[in-house]
Image 1 (cartoon, rainbow, N blue to C red):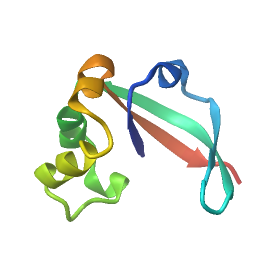
Image 2 (tube, rainbow, N blue to C red):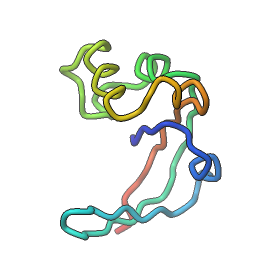
Image 3 (cartoon, rainbow, N blue to C red):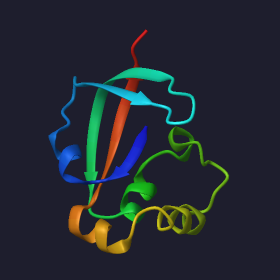
Image 4 (cartoon, rainbow, N blue to C red):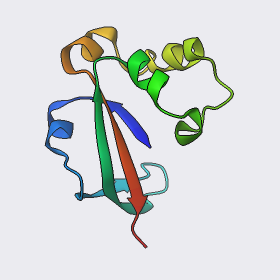
Length: 92
């Protein structure tokens, strides 16, 4: 499960779409298929509903997750766009 705040380009993502992620350090690319999309009004709402194992943060408290998230995304961005959790499956 990948989670991000909702910017305009992510509003266009649909189930079944293919996305290619690029590691900016190694330039390695990985293609995935979108398996599900869930939209939330806040990161808190999203984190309370998604299994922490899917986000690789099962040992983190909700407060720790929010604190680290707000180092990347502002509360203003969250309020304006909301958040989205994107389920993905690697294309082999």
